[in-house]
Length: 215
Image (cartoon, rainbow, N blue to C red; front, side):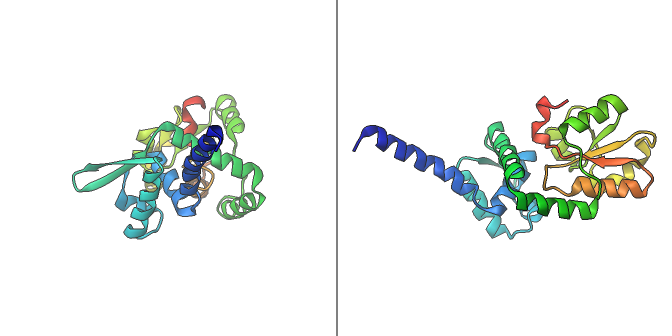
C-alpha cells in the first residue's frame, strides 16, 4: 500500500476519535461545563442531570480522546479541559451550529424567548452598549466559574444569589447579563428577574471562553 495513503488513513482514524467523543449530546454539555472551570465528578453529574455511572462513562470517553484531564483532590476527582484549545473547539462547534443549523436556532429562540422575549445582544451590540451607554456587565455563572476566567469588565453576580446583589446594581444604567454560552439559560432567567425588580436589563449572547479578546 502507498505509504502516504497508509499515513492518511491512520491519521484520520485518530482524528475521528475526537469526533466520536463529541458525537454525544451529554458529552458536549459536560465538555462545555468543564471548560468553564475545573469541577468534581459529583457536581458534573448534578449539573447535567445524569447518574454518577453515566457521568463517569462519558468522562472516560472524553479523557480517552484527550479532551479532558483529571486529578484527585482528597476524596474528590476533579476534571478540567486538557487545554485552552479544547475550550476554543467547544465555542467553534457552537458557532458553526448556530450559523448552519436552523432547527437548533429555532429551538433556542423559542426556549429563550419564553423566558426573555427581548433579543440577546451579540458581541458588537454588547461592546456598543458598554462603550456608548455605560452598561454594567454581570457574569451570572457560579462564582468559581467567574474566578476561573471571565470577561474583563464583568462583575460576578451568581444567579443563585442575584437578589443579594441587587443593592449594588445601578438602576440608572442598563444591566447586561451573560452566562456559559448560547444554550445556557442563566442569563435569560437573571434579566427576567431584574426587570420585575425595576431594572433595565438585557442578556448577551457571548461566551466567556472568548473573554481574552473581547473587552
